[in-house]
Amino acid sequence: MKILKITPENLKSVLKQAVLAIKKRGVIICPTDTVYGLIANAKNHSAVKKVFKIKKRKINNPLPVFVKDLKAAKKLTDINKNQERFLKKFWPGQLTAVLKAKSLKLPKGIISRENKIGLRVPNYKFLNLLLDKVNCPLVATSANISGKKASVKIVEILKQFKYKKNKPDLVIDAGNLKLALPSTVVDLIEFKVIRKGKVSKNQILKTINEIKL
Image (cartoon, rainbow, N blue to C red; front, side, top):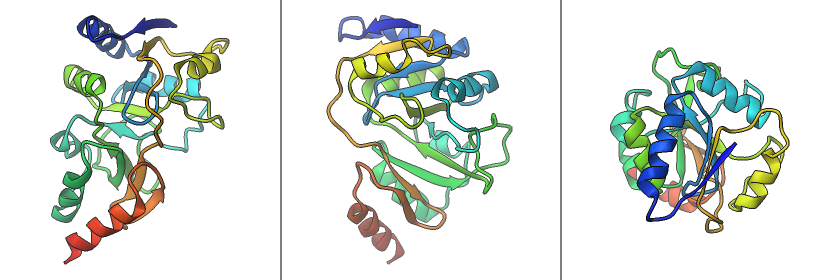
């Protein structure tokens, strides 16, 4: 498990190594605009499978996906006008949208049994640069063993994986992140909040009501 501390001075160098790790089917621990996350190529079967092993997550619990923008999201899902208006209010940002998946050959563990997929455009410089450079969607889940708490503290995260058989290939150490909640998860097919998070339920309901007017 290689650890790279990121600074403004070495950002380009660290980004280059992160891109290489993703292209080599690796799994990386990466800072995000919420908590540290486990990141891998969402289109690569072995990379996605490795995320499930590292996290000890059940395969029937689908992984959400980071995309670089709305255009990239539309390659994975059908987005109607009302859904697009909603997403433009919160993306990039700390909201994961559950939408109807297109008929794509994505790895097992991304699309649910109900044919839904969770997507988010993050708002974090390094991660957004990474999405742009790899030019592919990235599975993204909090960097913790299933059942344990997600964290913004790098020491806590490294401790969880240090002695595990299955561990990430690369760690991007940005120090301790600002205290934050996980992303809010909203089902945009049924327009309901699935998980409370950074974006408040009141903000969501207000936007939904505005769209329906």
